[in-house]
Image (cartoon, rainbow, N blue to C red; front, side, top):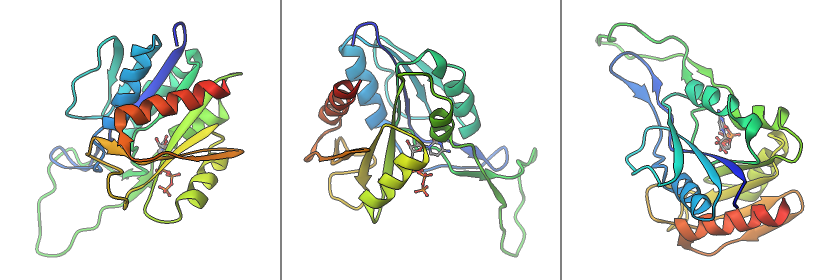
Length: 212
Ligand code: CTP
């Protein structure tokens, strides 16, 4: 991968409700960090745009820390023009609170509803604004209809590849050090067995390289 520029996103985003609380998800960033690390070992010039995670920054990787989906959008879209490959493994919030209180919300006796608005779809934007020859790989986490839903995302977001995993499978998904993924392109489906996230990262990179 020497001479190739890769941007990887990883981790969750945090969407503030008020100065005290936020909305987030269970992503730990392990899969994205493994991809960044393996790509750097192989000689790529790696930028890692990372949501808040509890992981050591990989060596020889340019880490750009962000918090919200909006910050991730800015960090990614301001750099995407220079990249040969973009791997979007971050679990970006699809919604954020429509207004963010400047003061802490105080409780009252009744229930509380929080109005949410859509965030920008970063991968969708990249699919619409990509430069010639740039490879786009998204991730798809599902609890049902894995193939069907992931194929729909591949087409909708104009990506070259989706790495799909079923959250309900033992050994796949968040937090653990293993994953079971299916690599989907326009004309292929490849199911990988249970592997460490590091091994999975190597396979994903191999699949991308085979198509460049
Ligand atoms: N993604 C993104 N920006 C968002 C939401 C998601 O770039 N605002 C990217 C993720 O990084 C991932 C891919 O889109 O690579 C799939 O995300 P997912 O949330 O699973 O797909 P959605 O199309 O949002 O579908 P749904 O939430 O309905 O399952």
